[in-house]
Image 1 (tube, one colour):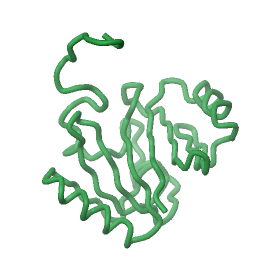
Image 2: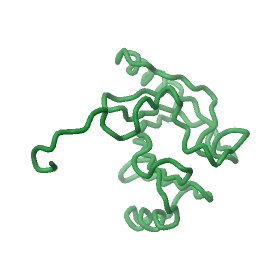
Image 3: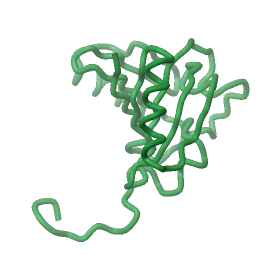
Image 4: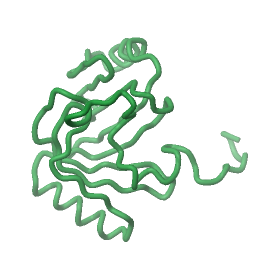
Length: 159
């Protein structure tokens, strides 16, 4: 079964853990000095926050699967997009070892499709650098994540 994944960069981890714990009515499933994650069933989401130097806001979205077969199915769907798909097998990121595929949506938001294989003791591989703001591959970051490619026109209710 698939689970939506949302990863937000934050500037004050403790304040955000308090906020999201109250919002979700649950403490984080994983909590580190620079990272927290809630594995919620209602709604079915893997919600993560980190304070690793990225600009606060949406870092990336994703779909987490429970098997290699589900991941292969998602990979097939991504290939149909005729977009640049970045493959990462056995990669360490966000305290987990995973097989994953990355792609940008038309707005430039990074989408991660992945199957978690195991947990790891560090945020990002063998050399856990605080400068590493997240695990989105450099090839997937052609625009600022979550920001439109061009300035939107001010129209309608949100203008």
